[in-house]
Length: 242
Image 1: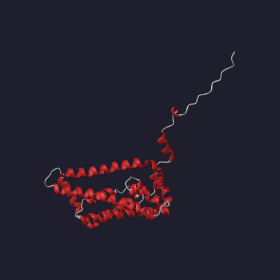
Image 2: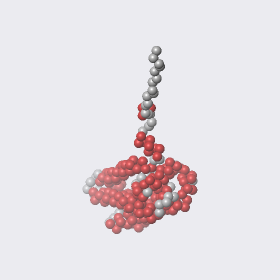
Image 3: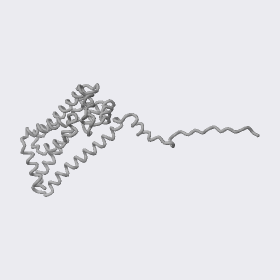
Image 4: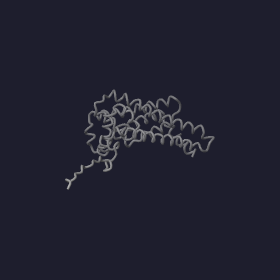
């Protein structure tokens, strides 16, 4: 396994660092653009590019490219929402996303504001819908950027750091340990599992802000059953004494 993994990592690292960094930035731009972000695996692109990082200059350059690409893509989504929001939502592609997802994003922004923008960066589907949804809302572009920029920095730093650390550890251990390849895979797997757990926890904690009022009320009060209905006793009447 070490030989195969070494060949793959060397192939990625053989790509010109400038070109590799630009490709990662463009990939993130596509990943965070409306609709495109549902099919372009931005996280995979960043992980692969991160395995080729060699030194602090390439590290910070890649993080910066990913952040700039993400912000550019979200800015495109915001502009599309500002100018063509209702048309996009009513289009065939918008219909494939589902009215329920559009409504959830709309309610989430209305109820949580900037916090929703920040957290949506880490939630599936919503991270592509929120920029265009914010564009249709009264929120200003400056406010939108103020919330999404730090989220993008955290996201980019986490992915690039894990990928570069895993690849660096493998290169140091591959000549001494036959299981170095499994250590590399284990680091990536643990990170991705952790990401999934965080997404699940965030989704559950924020779910009540996305559901409509009827769903929230139903989830808090539970289903209405005959046992939960108040009971009243009917007055009894007695006939006149004989």
